Length: 143
View 1 (cartoon, rainbow, N blue to C red):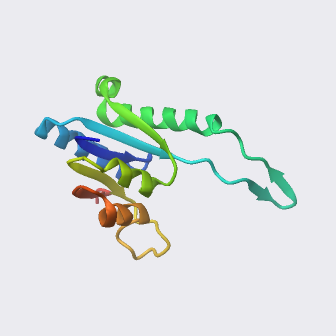
View 2: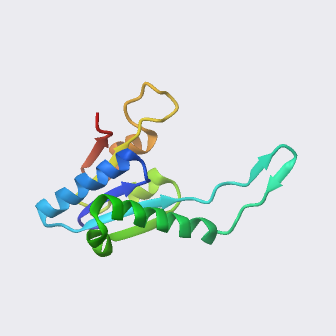
View 3: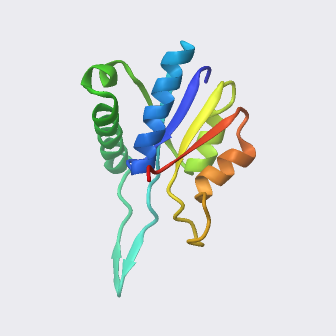
């Protein structure tokens, strides 16, 4: 994807990353590609009960709605109508790294909610910083 790629997930950091990426895209005169990654959860076991896995459409439609709502709330309805939102299914870090190919910048938020609370970066932002094919900007939650 040529231009600026930003990953969103509905978190506060994601919203800040979207604001930053949109501002950079305007300043640089580059297209903004908003990427939301969803996945189909594995089947769930509750006690002796089993909840079967639902079809992909059961997860894709809500993911599309959540991404559209986030973009509209952060950038405004007019900008959201013109924004390119790309939905991808899979692992967030892997999909964002793939989207970074050919991009001038990848922007991600950092919730820092990985396995160790003391880490400053989350696992997705760490993976993107280590493996993206373009410069990476990691946006933290405002103080």
